[in-house]
Image 1 (cartoon, rainbow, N blue to C red):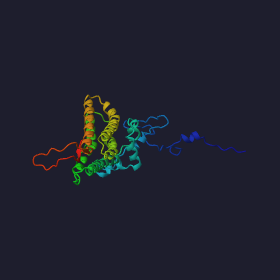
Image 2 (image 1 turned 45 degrees about the vertical axis):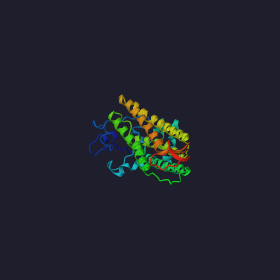
Image 3 (image 1 turned 180 degrees about the horizontal axis):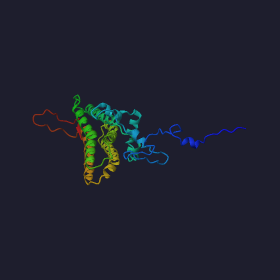
Image 4 (image 1 turned 30 degrees about the horizontal axis):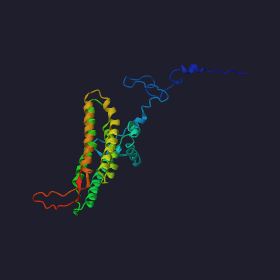
Length: 296
């Protein structure tokens, strides 16, 4: 039996360039040579350094600057079913406190613009239809002339309240040091809050004054509660006393808009006059009872 001398492995490892060598392909960070600008990450519990991937996926940022259409395109990338769900959810008072976290995540701009634009046409068409019905039921026999000035009033009032107020509020909160609310969320909240006025505008075609007051009060309460439930927590997070003044101003503006809707668009109805008209000097108004549309 012959014996062959075999070199030990540990001797081969200790040799120079001709021996075995181990090389790391993990980079300098894995070998322990980390610099101060790249500190080691914590291991975490089961999800090491996820960096809140779900939140990053919800951050919608388009390409280009804010003056380009590509920048705003992601905010309009929403399906119709989602927009309709966000609209009718505003009519549920119990869903208002959790609306932002549950239904408006992420916020969009398509729904608010759709709601405000639909409200403009609903106000104009309903007011014109109600006025024409009142004119038809009257006995003066004069044809009804559509007042297209109401359309320009509706555009100015609705867009100023639905777009201008949230932008100004966002600027004021940024000045007060409250940065938890984005301008897109502010516009989305205000836009979806106006959805309650759309069915009210349609129902106010019925020429019953008491019913119109009840409908306006209902829309005022629903939209006001929705705004308060979503805006007040943001205002309460600010330590400045100016937020109390902002709350009062917002409540006054909301009440003023509701009264403006009632007076300008929902006040034309038919009433039976009792007694005779008192002719004015230079007027040719015949005496007798008549039925004419009046403003209330």
